Image (cartoon, rainbow, N blue to C red; front, side):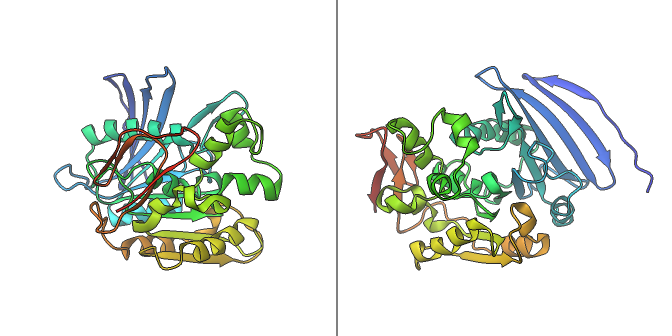
Length: 320
């Protein structure tokens, strides 16, 4: 098929854009200068019939295919999202002197995503009640981690998330598999070191902490649907099934699938199965009647305002 490509560059409010039209998908790349002076790159797709008057859902990709901000480019997930009229988004992530920009999906990557989302919302509005996150490996728990830190009913919240071989407990991964390069680069230390700060950062950036459940952020997952899929011989599949036992019946929707062998990452998530699962999840609940919250910093969570915490190396907990 003959593809017409139209490209132009815009410099508006410190952001650079490049728009490419190909078939029915509009592909937009952009660069935003963060307050830290780092240039955050992103890759956004819009359906050809996109209209800001009818904001579509948005699917955010986190680490697996290419480990960069072109995660969705040319993938079946991009095609499926476009068929549904959804937007897709991926960002460049955390800068590393060794590996360039990679998706470690730490707390600061979430903060960078928020800045990108603000910029996109101002130009290409999306449905704030239909935001989905998908990822593999270190991005396989991205939706869990983002949900942990985004329970403000007036802001961005995740309707549902899907992970392939999700590394949901960073410290447990280090203990069982002997490595966690991303966290070592991010925080300059290894879990179980003498540094309470490093140990806390492992906890803060995990979707769940199995050994410390009373102070784990996983309680924030109570209202968000989660789908996990790993190779049946892959170590992270055991974590997925353990999470079932940990949650019990408290979650609205939790599904665990497996594929054959020890395949790792996003490849375990079948596009049709994953997208259909997203479509069949309950609507986002911004004001749940029962709130069971672990918080890692002063902020608003649902209808509760955490003004101060007694410790910066532990979680605060509220049950309302």
